Image (cartoon, rainbow, N blue to C red):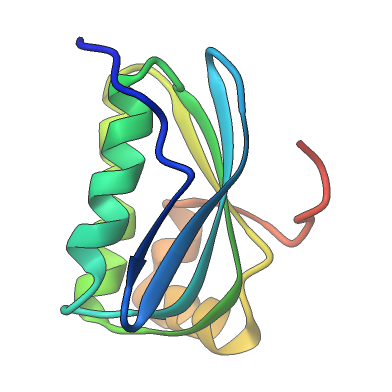
Amino acid sequence: MRNRPAPSGTAHSDLNVTLRYHDATRAVLTAAGALSSATADVLMAVLIHHLHAGRRYVRLDLSALHSCDREGMNALVGAHHAFLEAPGVLVLLGARASVRQLLHRTGLDTVLFLTADRHRR
């Protein structure tokens, strides 16, 4: 896989993805705003960029994500599978109650790696 420079952040009018930390194999990102059909590709592109750059262990802080629709969920599942196939891991941190409830209703809380702790690297 080709290495590319790590983006410091990617923005869409409804979603902002910010890089908080990275090294050769790890990254910590924050997603803020709405994860929807209009923004799912933005998040997926950022996550796959880090995976292709060799960062196979990524923590994605969702505490500033106020909404997520079906396409947003599909992006999280797609990224999850891409990391597992690498092999690597994508951990979702600090999701708000509304996002956690959606994950639970869809059964994705048993598939995705979730944690309430968003302060550890």
